[in-house]
Image (tube, rainbow, N blue to C red; front, top):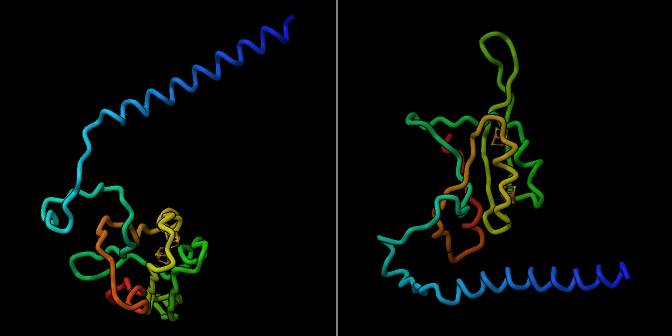
Length: 148
Ligand code: SF4
Ligand code: SF4
């Protein structure tokens, strides 16, 4: 008897979850549709701030970045999208430190997962919503993100 009650309960529970799903479907069905006339509306087009279009390196007004060439972003990247070259320099107090030469980012293999940004200890990199990244040759998809 108990199992029959459980069985009937599970049917009603299933119907209830189906109705919840249908509620969303119905809401979207009656929501007015918008057609974006891109690229004519380029000036007024609103892209969500959180949209991840491309990775950039943050530079200050003097063109300096905060990258320490530690390589954590590159290690975190699941598909080797980031290549970093660096050299060692001696500081005034006699210590050695890594200095970034080139920070290469291949947008063609990026999955926009943001693991690189999350793992950066100095917040040197971030994603922007600048979505117009189409180019005619594959080689142009590889960009050097550091200015110096
Ligand atoms: S961007 Fe951040 S994580 Fe990547 S090498 Fe530079 S400092 Fe390290
Ligand atoms: S967003 Fe993901 S795939 Fe793209 S460079 Fe960063 S870690 Fe790699």
